[in-house]
Length: 258
Image 1 (cartoon, rainbow, N blue to C red):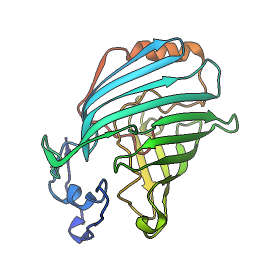
Image 2 (cartoon, rainbow, N blue to C red):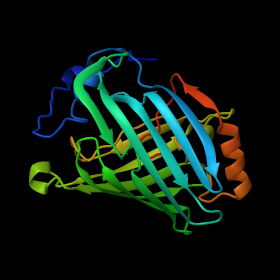
Image 3 (cartoon, rainbow, N blue to C red):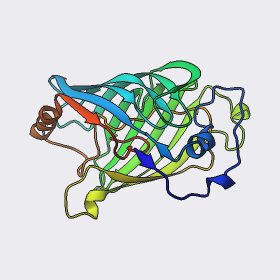
């Protein structure tokens, strides 16, 4: 549960409009309708499918705006700098109050989630990773997202991304295409006890209604302190996470968590 104590959202009067399916442009309605919200409530099962192959199954209220179910598959050869994954989701838009209800906007199938068809490249230089995602987004547009990020030794992650789909620059409007930068900081760096939570900040010049992906609170590939892991570390993590994990609350990962 999340309770807003003070804000100035009463000054937030901008309402998006589009002839495209509205994905994120109801942001004003989601942040102003209710002070008490349930941003995230989901169950996740993570396991090892075969040698170097991992999977997750998840369902619930995945984020503030969408709920549904999905699955993720990851192939990461031992000691390889390249990983490949597929993430497919079936989601529906939630009520503006972020309770247990849904809007009458229909169910949206998408090979998207976070990373549709997802090659991840560890460049081997200063823990810099490159990611290429391609697939169908929540507004039913088709395209790709390119992301480059660096993971520092203390767990802080900084990155930049841009997306291009079959939505024309003219229909997109100002800015021509979706782009932004983000910073993710682990609470571990400031607390005396271990924590999986992170503080996330994203800056985007615009908040388009397409080229958007669904978020959720757990992924097969999570943020880690080093870009590559040993076979024992990967197998140990998969064994530890096998079985159901329940997420009543918790910080959402922000964009493109690994």
